[in-house]
Amino acid sequence: MANIKQDNNKLKEDNKKLKEDNKKLITRVEVLEKDSKKLKEDNTKLKEVNKKLITRVEELEKDHKKLKEENKKLFTRVEELEKKDLLKVRANTLKELFRYLATKVASLVSPIVDATKPNWFNVMQSYCSSNIVIELPISLSALQELWSTYKILRFPRNYICQKQLDDNLALVSGDEKKAVQWYLDQTQNNH
Image (cartoon, rainbow, N blue to C red):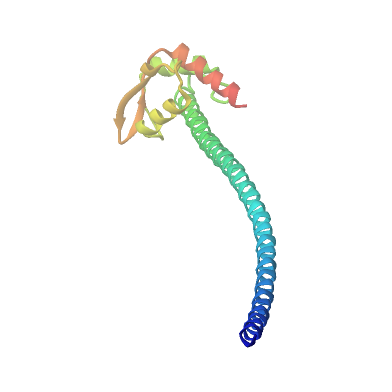
């Protein structure tokens, strides 16, 4: 009888201990559930932040691509403007060259033709028949560059003697009709 009572007391103590352990476990589970819930919420928030970051990166990449394209267009435009400016400079050089040539020729043949109101064909024809050499204020390489730039295919190259006199060009007789017509075309186009 004493043993039964002792066993009963021991069972009561074990039961009490189990209840305490159970209580601790329940508290621990509650804490873990709470932590789990918080982790899930954090994970959801991080996913949203990550999604926003991905969207932002895509937007930035799109902007970067757009800026690159705009930059490329700007570079192309700058190149076009630089080329246009260069062509303008060369056009003016060409214009000045022929103005100089016309004045020089007119002054040389002034006894034959009125230099103030010259008929360019008569001026050039008179000049060519005179076999006078004029040194032009432009180097052979510069004139070749002008030819190359403007791709002047109709320019009668035999009209310009390609020998240098102190790095200048000498003009000699040639196909004067074509030369004068070309000059007149250029004068009309430039005005």
